[in-house]
Structures are given as C-alpha cells and as structure tokens.
Image (cartoon, rainbow, N blue to C red; front, side, top):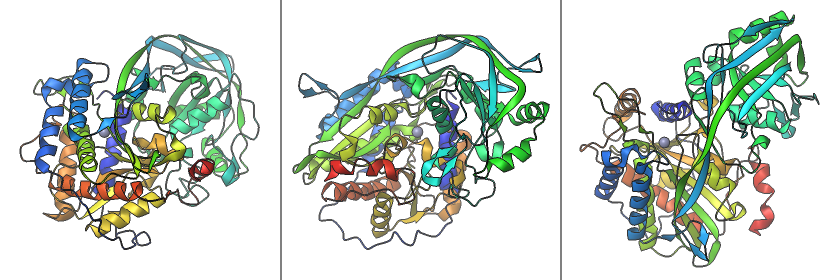
Length: 566
Ligand SMILES: [Zn+2]
C-alpha cells in the first residue's frame, strides 16, 4: 500500500456499493427517450485492454517509472486507433497527446523533532504514534517552528453561506491551530451542514487550506475514528511516508508549513493541562457561538529537514471536436496510474497490477472514445482525460482542473470512472458520495431508462464524494460525479454483489492480486458504458448546462462563471 489516502478512497468506493439496498431515487426519474444511435460496447475489447494494461510488463503503472512510459504509449496508440484526435498541450499551434504534470515529492529526513511545551516543560512527541505530521508541501526544505502559540479552533470552518465562522477574527499568524474532523453537525446529525452527510468543510484537505488562507504556521487535526471514518493506522500510514502534490504557483496559499493529526487522548490531556475540557469545548464547537480558545502556557515546537524534488508525469488526453460548439466541452475521465512495484505479497509477487483499479476505467475511456468517434459527430467537444497520480492523492485530475486545457466555465460536466466491476450485469448503479446536481438527475433518468435503478451512498458522512478524480472539477464548480458499478447483480442479487466486493476488498484491493481474470465477462461494464455514452451524447448535443443543487457548496462557484455560458 503506497498511499493510504487511496486506500480510504477505494474502501469508501466499495462501502458505497457494498450495501445498496436503498430504493431508487424518486424525484430524479423523468422519462428519457431512447437515442437514435446507441453503440455496442464489446466485452472482448474491454477485456483485452484491461489484460494488457494490468500485465506484468506494465509494472503496476507507477507514475514516473518505465511502467508509465509503456502505459502512455499504449493508451495513445489505442486512442489513435479508436479515432480520437490529440487533445493535450498546445505546442507550436498543435495539440499533443499529453499534458505534463509536474509533481512535488517531499519526505521528512529521519525522525522529526516535535514537542508540546506546557508550563515550561517540553513533552516530546513520537511521530506515528502520538502525532502524524506530513512532509511539508509548501515547498520548504526544512521546518523550524519554535514555541508557537496553540489555538483550539473548533471545526476550523468558515462558511459564509451558512453564517458560520469558527475563527471569529482570531489571528493565526505564526500559530498552530488545533481543529476537529468532519462537520460541526456530524455528531448531532442535524444542523446547517447537511446532518450526518459530510460537506467539503468536513474534509481534512479543506481544514489545511483554510489554515493556509489564515496564515497559520500549522494545523493539527484531532483524530477520532467515527467522524474521520477511519482509524489511526490510516492516518499514520497516509501521512508519515513520502508525500506528493501538484506543483503550485503559490504552494503556501494551499498548505500551511505544518500539517498533521494528533491522537484524541493527546488533545484531551493537552486541553486539560490548560484547564479546558475537551468534550465541553466540542459541544460548544457545534454551535455558532463558539469562540477559539488559546491554550494557556502551551506552545508547539517542530524541527526537521526535508528531502524534496519535482518529478514529471503525464495526463493523456484524447478529443473529438464539436461540430457546432467546439469551445464547449464534456469530459470523461479515469486515472491510468496504480501503485507500481512494491512490497511482495505472500506469494512473492511485487507487481501491483491494478486490473480493476483502474485498468477498467482506462479501457472504458478508450471504448467511449471509439463509440463517439464512430457515431454521429457531437455538437460540443468531448475530451477523454486519462489522468495520472490518483493513487498519490487525486493529483493528475487536480492538476488538469487547476490548469485546464479547455476553460472550466465552458466545461459542461466531468463523468469519472474508477474501479469498475468487470463481472456480470447489475440492476443498479451508484455514485461516490451524495452530492446533488442536474447532472446526477440526468444520469439517473438515463440509467433508469436502461434498466438500472440508482442506489444512494449509504455512508455520506464518510465524505466519499471528495475522494475521487471528479472532485477537482466539482470544487471549481463543474458538475461532476464518479460512476460506481451496481452491486445488485442480475445473477445472484445483492448477496452475490456483496460477496464479490468483500472478496475484492479483502484479497485484491491495492494488492498484487488485483489481476486480470479469464472468468471476467465485462457484461455489466459494457451495459453501463451504454448508459454513460447516452449521458455524454445528450450533454454534447444540447444547450443545457446542468448545475449543482441550490444548497450545494459548489453552486456559488459555478454561478460565478455563469457569464461564460451565455
Ligand atoms: Zn482508483
């Protein structure tokens, strides 16, 4: 397991599909007329592509490895043969097949020196067991924080549209903020942040970003298993190894110098020594009246060296230019990367083949490209975006969305595919998370007309929506979702679907055993691709601009570019 963020991602994905006993969504279902042209998706082609991409020869498709070189060459060759044009970077007036993605790689050298100083006494902290501090992603070559004041800031949320501000004007410059994970209304289940369901304000990425905006020297998140939705082991493993980020123009605008988590017990005793009660403060933090509290006689100290460098990977981009509105774009996306070569499993296998995750999505992208290239020419352009470094934290998609090749204001939607089920036909489908949009309604209606009912994410509090490649688009306002294969199988129902998921999660997921199997029929995938084709086809041949639901945290961002879509 190279990246535990990704572990959380896929566990999330499979818990989504793992208990889809919910009834279909009601309101979204409007009748959809069958389109004049619906291509057939050949399961044999999907199988052959997955087999090649996940073969040992591709070395687990690690970014910036020989496996990447093979993968990029293969996908370009397939896209070309499918009839796509290059849609990548402009060079001398011509489009390349790729978009270079520079990635910052950072690692703490040795054991970091970390301590809380309480009443003049230093309490050294052990990295990995009491605290988990990430290598800095603000570009620093060393970290030296000396006796910084410590401020407890509740949930660390500023949400003007919800009239919520945990900071109340406190100055965090040069200070360390301590915050709680998830939304202020996670525990009560009712409130201004959608109750149990997690908004973006609940994600740790948001909390770091907000701390950076406020100029804090650092942010420490208190780990609690329920609101985090994973245990300390995940926090530890995903934060104390090599970190990656996209290369940003101003990294300190996104990352405070120190980013990390502390164990709940440590937070409790730290507050106690300042005469504060953790549970009481937490209760207060669940109200608008909460005010940040500076910890008496308490400071934080950190000191370590950093090994960092820039590596370059590639997003692969195919395109079909729209016949009538070439400047308006529908995007299909999927990540090509996986974990590469790593620790051997019990059989001594060191190649993490990533057949399901995500050779399936990459094959789907190629075949959707073929379908559009051979069908009627769409009015709007369609981009087939095969992104890198998902397993390192959704970085290829974040890079594209931060430096879009086609303007986001005129991007109709992003339809993402990650870890599709290569087995049989299902009766349902799902999306990661529960964000509502016109795009989701459209997908739901088309899927219904094709015999697939929609299953809601049964665990929206886990924030699955923020853990897939569509998210870089969503956060910038573009309607987006990740399609999840259904688990209510035509052959065997939910019981069979669950059995497959459980086996995959326990025995294959992020392990060398995620390999192509001759028994895979790809019947479900080829049916689902018919639905995704129709969705893209409708979007590409209409004047509609689906938007986020009125109460969505992404709505205002989308509305801000409404002028681009006149
Ligand atoms: Zn994946």
